[in-house]
Image (cartoon, rainbow, N blue to C red; front, top):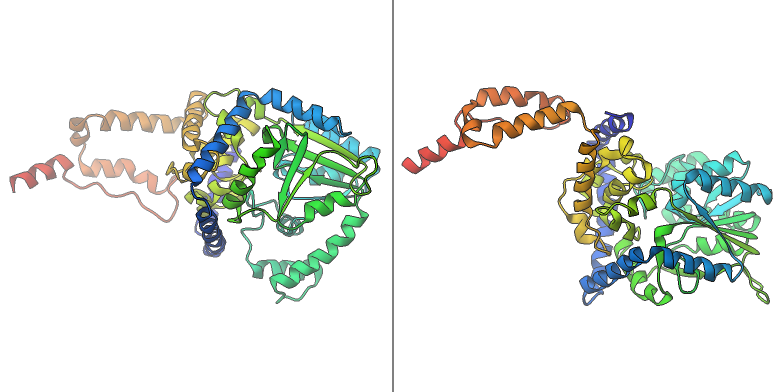
Length: 459
């Protein structure tokens, strides 16, 4: 087992039976479930909408290069600069150059998992540039010295009491502050940061090919503020975020909102098509778009897993997953957690260290059921598991045990030949290795099923 695999097992054992954690997650996700249920009810035929979205995203994957080049052509025509980053190292190099050339001392950024992927905040700090998260959830975890717990809801693992205690320790606000009071405190603090910032950073929910546009959706207005005052707007986006047409947003905006938060549509939906144009008075003086690969083309080359690139990062699969709800976001120790993270991470960060995530699933299929773009997540998880075995990345003992089980159980007479006491002896070690402290292997009866069945017939 690798270090990452051992760490995953240890962390999962520690958090799975943490009563406080489970209570917080259950409460927060229950609120999500109610809201999303209402969001789905607004659709006359949500499955038709999902099928249409899935079709568009598959068309994108068939014509990926064409749409990306069209996007680059259209947005550069309006004065933006496009940089292609093969990996984290290249994206970091670009970022360092941008901050250094502008002598940037303060950076404000809106919520973006892609910036988490390349550890933007750490890079900025090393350059002597303060990086401030402006999304409230991201701000909370940044103040706590943590990373986002969830793709959509970064502070899902914290209760309002946890946050009040954190703010009291960091900002000396009242320990009994209400959510509204804490939000107002952060709002006033960020107003000053927006106006002082040298650089504003956003991600992209969608890259729009036909107009060369960056679509950013949010609920707090912080992305708008992060781009309104700084002279430089930097966009860092994964190359899979491309969609063909501006008109496609009429389909994707409601799907993303309904599956992500249960809203009919997200509160703020902004499209950036370049820096401030001649005659305009608002907006940044320059716009730089960093398009990140970082393992995406490797995933694209895999005939069994490439459809994972259709993901629109709504977070629905995380909220539906019984494993995620049990072990939480931090146990995965990756940027992307839950079912989609278990699919993506082995390609992004290597099967050797992260193939174990593909086994962190019950394969119940709930993630497939809720996916707005119909990604066959369970099929991909199974194919990832097979690749892991083919690459000899699973423990040798596991292979020996499975071969023994196959030999014993593939034939009824062979299986019945082993008495119950011997079967119990063979499975006893599982009570101490890998099963955790809260459950025991079921006991085999002294009589086999065949014997019991025969006796019942005779009666």
